[in-house]
Length: 247
Image (cartoon, rainbow, N blue to C red):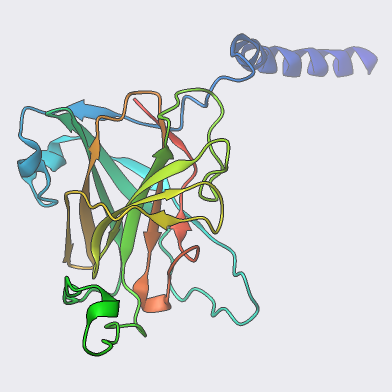
């Protein structure tokens, strides 16, 4: 009986041995190689790739990125009435820029056209003007990466970075357009006042959005987020991914 037991234990150890050796060969601080998105080189101009429906995007291999739902912050927060379990991410490099194409299923099209605020500063206007659509929320998406473009094994906090490792966020909203945001921790999000090229198309229950980023180098981690306006998603109420290394 003891011999049979020893044989079983030996067989199990032999089955585990290759995985153990492979794990030991990886440095303790090495980034997970399976969590990565690859950037494909393209001969097309960035302007052509900004079209989310361009045929060129179909020729670039996509990566299904799992999305997690942020937990409710307060008891009064309504539960999520829809699920967006993943987004498909495709990435291309051209003309010294990084183009990120995101696509995800959404049963509702929550977008609007909001008038551009007057150029006159508020304190110089003859009368106050109410903000438009202040009681509505809109579909949105974003790409986040370390502000210092670090390729090290340690990534910033997924909760909008931290003071030691701040983040830059390329955010696009279906009503307000694209805006560049900086953050160094939860509750520190700050708009820079800058914009960037981005386009979004909603068709047949699917959002396709293309964001134009600078030439982010390989090895930098990227994180992705999606907001569903129909369930009042905004700020930290969203779907988000873990970090994915850019290849």
